[in-house]
Length: 115
Length: 112
Image (cartoon, rainbow over all chains, first blue to last red; front, top):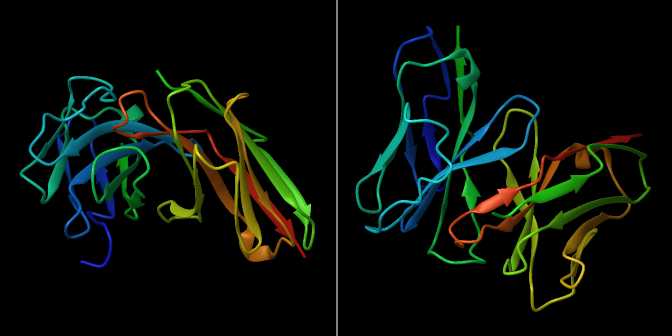
């Protein structure tokens, strides 16, 4: 597609439920990122995928968070047993290749509210 | 790991004035420094970036300067317009070179 596509755009879930957020990167982009942005805050790195290499999971805040990506296609971020502090915008981004200096393009985000 | 500090957190200017946002980073190995603009309800969009082999880069009303020795870089917006109002984020690559680490953002308000 023309840009990074994320779904759902908005999600309200009850505390304790699991949620899945989806990201379609820009076609041909090998690198994919997930970030979290709490209200009025900066972007917090969660996880990075590059092709078939092992992902960099160093930003995942707890074992309730996981993400998958098959090859260079769609990625899914899963949050298990959601808590109120998980409420945030989850931003996906992609870039054309690994390494420093490649432009990273963001999607519009998935707004998650845990009630 | 990499740490990026951004100042000020809020900035209010009159239309036509200049605006300057400053960032510092901790990892001397970082060599890519983009700036993103985020409008309400939207994802961040790249507005300008600079690499470590360059000290300054300009694109119309926007410029970025980099001081590698001091490990700081700045965004300069001249002749500000109301549509420049947004949250601006600076970023630097992390130690592994796998992702960008962002500052906490600056909310710029341009009043006419």
